[in-house]
Image 1 (tube, helix red, strand yellow):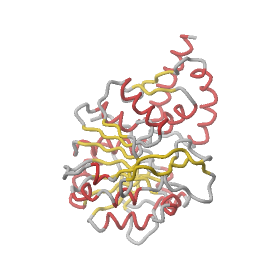
Image 2: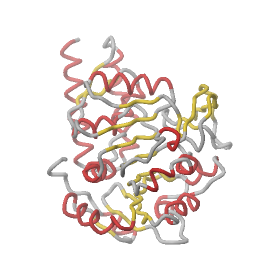
Image 3: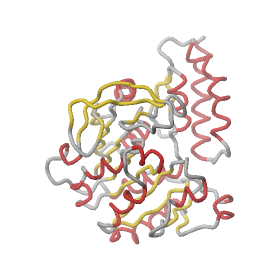
Image 4: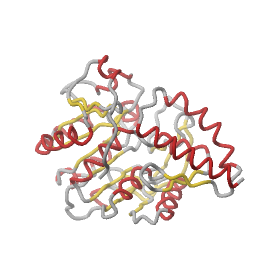
Length: 331
């Protein structure tokens, strides 16, 4: 059994490294088969297994969900963007941290970086804390949901379909969901009671992004850098919209880019639906980069030189054939 466990750890390391370096078409289609083939190994291993990621930290695998999280967390373009952008800030804030893949990656590649994570769901929080302890990484971990105001108890729901890690304070009525737990909420203004320096924020909270940003005025005033998931259907469940999300940033002079995981940063036009929805459909979510206008020129230059990113609006044909070059050097 020991050799099977060691083999599985090596195989998963190779697989995650391949996913990071090479874009695998239709990975979401292949994923269920990969999970099914590999799940027997960690099921037969007491306590699961720890897989070393491409960035040197160990990630605990002990069920289907943690395996799926490992194989899908690495959004290649987003992760590479984070590495470059983190050079320009001292603090990384991960809102909706799940098991902590992004928080661990940023901390592991820069031990001096101040990393703060928010994850309200109890199972995810325990896994996140366990992963940080296993890697001896100092991450400030908070078991609270980020919203527009602080509240002692609020209902958290889980979708029955889709990603098993999708938890939300306000579910889409048309989808099947169940009550998960009562959680505490906090606004980022309440958490950071004083003015803070420019930070890098990654926010993926299943439609709660507008609420969270309304309670994050200090971070906006500090001209922080943001990456937020945009999913119109989930935003609507919170009585908000992608238009409202974009306007929040435009009002304080930010430029907006769609992060196509194939390696294109496309400028989001004014008075236009999210670009990714035009190409991929409204039911899909995607990450968007929000940069202060005064930082755009230097950061665009840095991204082009470091990662070979393309900027501007691409045609559908160009988007379908573009491949992100390998990252030759990490920060």
